Image (tube, rainbow, N blue to C red; front, side, top):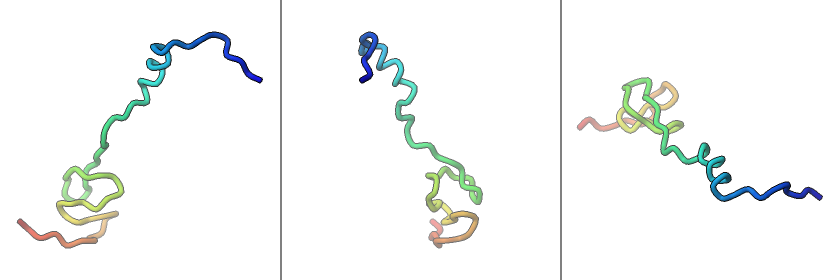
Length: 60
């Protein structure tokens, strides 16, 4: 059975895990209109997904 060689303090453990913290929602640009959009989602501004028009968006 594996035994730990020495205790890892809370500070050391938290420093190691700090690199994996949540960075927030990463957005990408819509290739059609250039607006910010969520990845793998339909663009809310123009209704394009994967290079084709999926939803018609009413002009405001």
